[in-house]
Every structure is written in C-alpha cells, then in structure tokens.
Length: 557
Image (cartoon, rainbow, N blue to C red; front, top):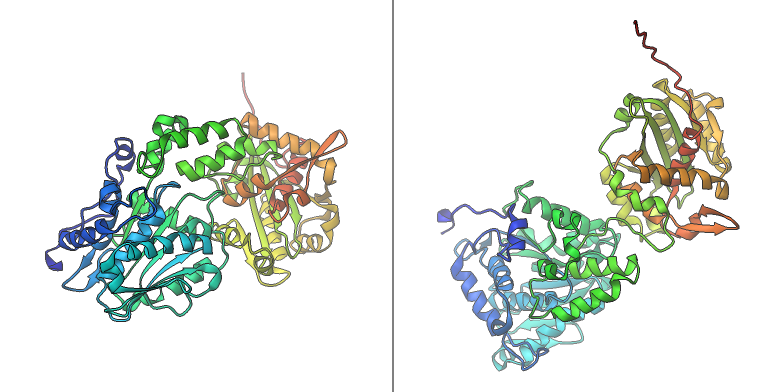
C-alpha cells in the first residue's frame, strides 16, 4: 500500500490567503483515508460531559479539528505498521478547546493501539495543565458503558489502562520528572510555551521521545498557545521550525504544522486589532469561543495599559510578543525593533569612519557585555554591534534565564564559558579587531571593573590611553537620552540580535532626584549589561571624535 502512496507535502505557503478566507490550513489529505475514517468514528462518539447537555464530540466539533485528527491517524500505514508523519504541531489561541482535543486524540490512540503493554503519555508543564487533559479522558470513560468495560482509570496516578492490550495512557506533570525512562509510542506535549521557560525542557523532551526510535507506529504531538513573553527555549525552536516547514523554507514531510496566527501584513496594518478579524486565530469562534466575551475582554484591556493589551493579544490572538515592555520601561525600547538591520562586526568596521567601544559587567551571575559603535562614513548614522559572555554557572544560578541564554548562544550573540578568564580573552580579541582597523577612538569601561579587563586589553596591545572610565549611575542619564533620541530619529541602527532586544526590554527607569537612571537592581534577574556597555560606547561617540585616518579629496575648479 505504501508503495502506491502519492506524494504529499506538509508545507502550506499560501496559508495567509487561506486563513483570511476561512479555508482549511491542512497541507495534505489523510495519507490513509480508511484509517482516518475509523479514528474519526471513535473520536466523534466521545461524550463531552462538561458541555451543556453532554453532546458527542461529533455533534459540536468543527471541521478544522476533524481535519487535524484525521491527519494524525491517517498518517499510519496499517500494512507496514509505521507512521509516515511522526510530528504534529498545533498553535491555537486560548479557549479553542485545545485540552479537550488533546484528550480526545489520546483516547482514540489508546483504543486503536495494537501494541501490547504500550505506553502513551501526555506531558504537561504543570499539575494544573495535566488535570485539564486527564479530566476529560476520565469523563469520556465514565460517560460510556462500553468504554468502562474496556478501561481501568486510576485518578491517583493519572493513568488509564486498556484491559485488552494492557497499554497505558499516563498524564505526567513536568514537576514529577516521571517521563524519565519511558518508552512511549505516542506522546502529546501540552502547552509547549511553558516548557520554553524550563532550563531542562530539551532533555525532558528527548527523554520522553526516546522510545520512538523502536516504535515506528509512534508519533509526538505538540500543542500550544502563544507565550506571554518573548518566545524562548524549546518553544521558540519548535515555533521557528514549524513556520519554516509551513512556509516551504524547510522540507520535512514527517513534520506537520498547523499554526493559527495573523499574516505579517495584517499585524503591520493593525488589522489584528479589529474585532471582525478575531476569527483568524480563533477557528472555534462561535463554538467554544464566545465572540461577545472576546470583544468584551478586548475592550477592557484596550485602554488599560500596554502590558494588559499585549497579554490579551498573545493569549487570545496568538500575536507574538517581540519585547518585554513594562510600565517603567526605558523609552528607547519603544523604537528598538524598528531600528534593526542585518550586519556583521566586520561590515560595521569597514563602513565606519570612527569607532568607539563599551564594556560592562562580568560577575559570576552577570553577563559581560561588549558594544562596538560605529559612525557610518557617508550617512553619519550610528551602527551598533554587541556580544556578551556568561559563566556556565549562571545557567544554574539563574535557571529562569537559562533557556534564553542557550537561544542567544545559538544565535551567536552570547558565548558561554566554563571558567573565569576565557571571556576576557575573547573580548580582548574582539577589541583588538576594532583597534587594528585604525578607526578606534576610545573604549569606555565601568570604573569599578577595570582590573582584569584592563589587563586583558593591554595584553593584546591596546594602549592604556585609549581606555576611559565612564561614570555610571545617574551620570549616564545624558547618554541614555542620547541613545533614545538617536533611535527615535532613525539615526541609530543595531544588528538585530535577540540578545539586545531582550536587554533593551529589560531596562527599567528609576527617578533619582531630578534625574533618571537605568538600574540593574530594578531589572532584577533580567540582565542589561550589554545595554550598559552600549551607553558607555555612546558616551564616547557623543564627544564627536575625529577619524584617526582622514581621506582628503581634492576638487579642481
């Protein structure tokens, strides 16, 4: 049968037009329609106890859900006993029955499974999310005498056992670490965005999926709403990959993404804020999602402040948060994203007539931040490039930041070192690259952290007279404001590094007397050292240094 299988794709590059037109986003028909049909028959018979009048799933479920269920089970080749699409990713807005869908899919999987003593697991980030998936499964069985005869339910262990095959479906909360050693055939991972905040999520996923190598009939299903902050960790990895597969940038016939989000052009045009467009990310609108409730909630937060609005947009409209903006945020953060350009340090050096640099941080729990600021030789606009270092111990001490640090390391904007010393050595090499260009004016440093840094810079041949102590605290206020103005005017570009987007969003303003300052204490565990390094570089560039090597042009008249 599989030899006669037609070609299929998991890409849907025209998804933007289709989602606006309320058309299916499914990239392909079920590969084995007969298997899909059997699964749908079972799925449609499940009884929804927590819905008024306890209807069957088939009586209230909308087509998009049935398409997703059909795709999962229709990917199984019953002759070869292998699944041809082995990963599924669904991003859906809050209140679109995600947990109920998860429960229904896994219930069907447990019924159709023919491997004796097979393990099926639902992996949830918290006990609360685990309960959201387990309770509907328990209720499916309690409401159907036929299912009662087939299964044993253990509420205490959150386990359902198929009495015929001895296969088990277990709902596991991440806190329990019970996924270790599992050899699961089918894994459903719920609320992936919350796993993105866990430093050990990647190894946890790897452990949970360990059994798939020897179980060709198996698969993993990822379900999530959008994150309530900038996506990071395993969630960011999966979301980026899913978008690439959907858009046809990456070809992976074994990975099927289904993403309900606004096309970029609608976000840019502000169309996502029009209530008549809320259907875009809420395919269950009119069913599990009450349109009047959604509009009412939107009206409440629209004028309640940016933080409340952003949270609503993320959870109910799947609008990705680009920066962590708060009420006492640094004003420059407002213009940060729009001033992004794609350039390297080498390009910045090549196209600048003069360069300044800044350094800040370096404690065991901190980032060591490095900034290079160039003045473009032709436009006179400022170009900013950054890099940072951190000790590996910081990932343990600041577990909440660990997923982000690992993302930045993959991006290339952060280097994680195991011991003290290599960070300063590497920074000194970057500084030497700048110095060797012949365009370096000065390097600005925090006066309190000169010791080891000074030695490292001197060791690579940078003269001490080119190192300047820049006063910190409220004395930086003028340079902070200069940075803000340059960003707002469009006269300062940065290299579009996620590291710096995070740092700029972390910056908090503190008023001190008649002045203002950006306080590391106010930012808490969220780091800003590379941003402070930027202000140190700005302080030196604000003095309007002359190029060290001038090119003179002679004009004849």
